[in-house]
Image (cartoon, rainbow, N blue to C red; front, side, top):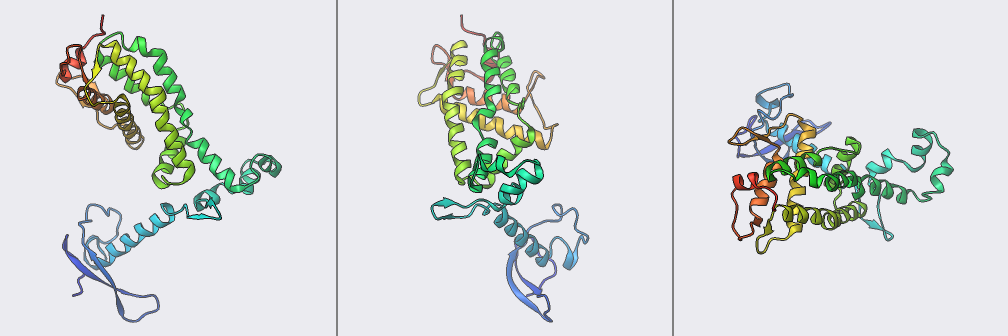
Length: 296
């Protein structure tokens, strides 16, 4: 049965008049979603051209699928033993056009370094996603660990978390690195960079967390690994970083005493509470962890 507006959850047929055709043809079915508050720019708010129209929802579904194919499937399969280059890269960073048209440099400057375009594209990604882009934050954390941990554990967590949000690289590059990871996680340069970053967490951040726990007289609960705790904290921090890029005024957590915590610091406190015990093997409450002083 043909309908002009569907009810959310209802599966309906989609009848469309093809280009050059004279009669509507059945294109398939869609399950109607409630898009009335989602489609804020559509010109019709109801009826056959509105948000609940099967044709409207079919067009949007196909557009989303087409965009995914253009972006997510951009990195093609391996051919002749080499991974194909994503079209987005070749279109934006063409081997010859970039060096000559964008940088106004001789093509020889490119060819002496990257004779093959594929190698050029991959090294650009290697650079964008290099784990060393976080080195400045790491050094600052190590250099200030003693000063930050002079007071309570709560104060330390707040200072430590805030350092994680100080971007020392171009924010646009930070966004690009996240986009590459989301779009092409299995593209070799992206995959290699993520593996290298995971190793950096193990080699650099785990020892720092170990020092901090020892400073406050805390040990891990049985079955908990420092790497797991470090991974969880870094995952939370990464999430808040990109939420802040979207909304600089993103909410804070306000504790019972009225103090404000970034979501990373507060969530880090919860991760810590589930991961450590004191010298007597006792699990500490959030309030006890916040007030805890360095071990003598």
